[in-house]
Amino acid sequence: MKELANMLQSAKHTVIYTGAGMSTESGLPDFRSEGRGLWKRFNPDELANVNALIHNQDEFTEFYRHRLSEITKYEPHKGHELLAEWESKGMVKSIITQNVDGFHSDAGSQEVIELHGTFRLFHCHHCLEPKDRDAYLQGDVFCSDCDGITRPGIVLFGESLPQEAFMQAEKESTHADLFIVLGSSLSVTPANMFPIQAKESNAKLVIINREPTQLDQYADRVIHNRNIKEVLIEINSLI
Ligand code: ZN
Image 1 (cartoon, rainbow, N blue to C red):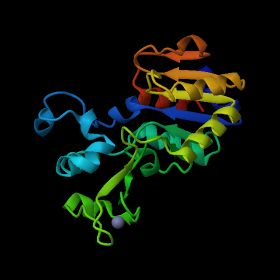
Image 2 (cartoon, rainbow, N blue to C red; image 1 turned 180 degrees about the horizontal axis):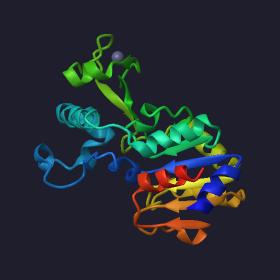
Image 3 (cartoon, rainbow, N blue to C red; image 1 turned 90 degrees about the horizontal axis):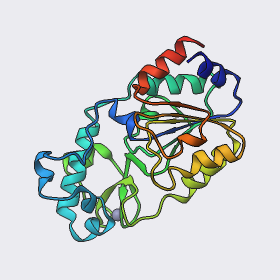
Image 4 (cartoon, rainbow, N blue to C red; image 1 turned 60 degrees about the vertical axis):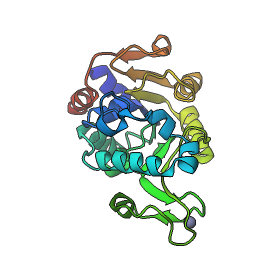
């Protein structure tokens, strides 16, 4: 751990990459887990689809109001807070995340690149007008300007990743001299692309994930079977 603390302190451009493992430590249930009442009838992967938004609006909306109500029950944990604190001290440059819960921003991080969008923002799918999240939760799901359907600002299956976020993530990865993965299995593209880009640009690569990942062989340090939050607290106590 002391070595990780040293790496963090001596690095000039640290980029953090977070995946689902970061959010589950806040208690946020995995929406795909079985037996979750209402959603037994539907496959969440089918509802998280741009076709469902257009052709199955009632169930799409019901599903996302449910997910939003789940997310608003939980909050960032100490690990999210430490990353924000390290950023304010200049020890972290940016966070690239696959998560859509917005917990990094909620915790106070400024440079957050959300590859899959965010549940913090809602908009009209038709005219793109921003919409109020609380109003959506209350059931106000149609646009008062154009009657279009309101939707969360996340990337659905069948949609492309936000170009700007993607390019920013590439830029951060190539500028990094330390790249730390927290709670991602790195099994899909582009998740696994950024650590490789960082490594090819001579960054040190650290992977902290409960399970082994496909990129462990390229990493300078790997930590398995640990609670991310506890690892970050421990590192923080050494700096
Ligand atoms: Zn509209």
